[in-house]
Image (cartoon, rainbow, N blue to C red):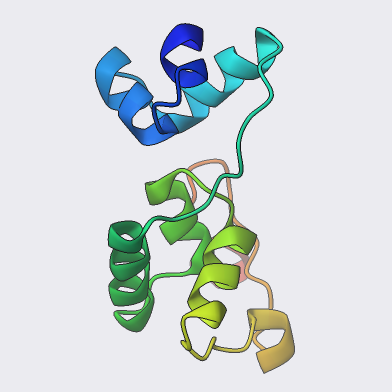
Length: 111
């Protein structure tokens, strides 16, 4: 991995060659003391992110799918001219606690 990345191969291509996720390759490279180049979205990934965002996906969902942070997704979407929806907190949507399974917790009469 290290040799591929340090030879100038993009992280995405290193991931494809070794058959591992971006997060796994990044973790191994950092452990090996490799200084990572600027990470972000390429043009194809930005198109995917834009389409998914317009279809209703959250920045978190898109980031997870593309192997980058939600902040990175938001930055790239804004820089490409996409207007971001207000966050749940700003929009006044109450937080829904989630249980370990990822579904909303049941309370009161629902339980």
